[in-house]
Image (cartoon, rainbow, N blue to C red; front, side):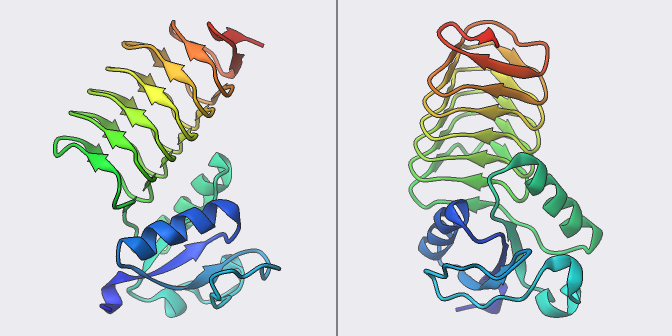
Length: 208
């Protein structure tokens, strides 16, 4: 295994387990994990290196890769800011089962899960989660720190604002724009533009 494919993960709970298995399937080695405390469960027998703010992070990580393994948008944003501050080596984690268009662009610290489709000319920001069985159709734009939960569908030319969460099995109609910091409830159907942050639920999705 090449040392260049060794990854330190940040966060070690349910969402991290999914990322760990994707990385292993893609040929990466997990070097260990950082978290605010040592995990009670350690199903992958990983070494704990401490809380990232309390250790000599550059000396430990060196030239290895790093990845934020946290589902919550604001925490993931803080972790990526930390990576940038210390010039740590970020990358894109893509499950081998995903189908990614050659014309799509994906920024660092983004996770693309199992059986995801990302289609032509789509643009995905940094620190995004696109979870199991999601579809991102042609010409979609997803800003930084978005979380698209399992089974979510973005039809063509959808724009999703920064730090927005789109719940499981939700559908967003083509040519729709969603503002920053929006929460779309699970199973909702977004059929018109959402211009303000807040919680939107139902079919059609309405402000709650």
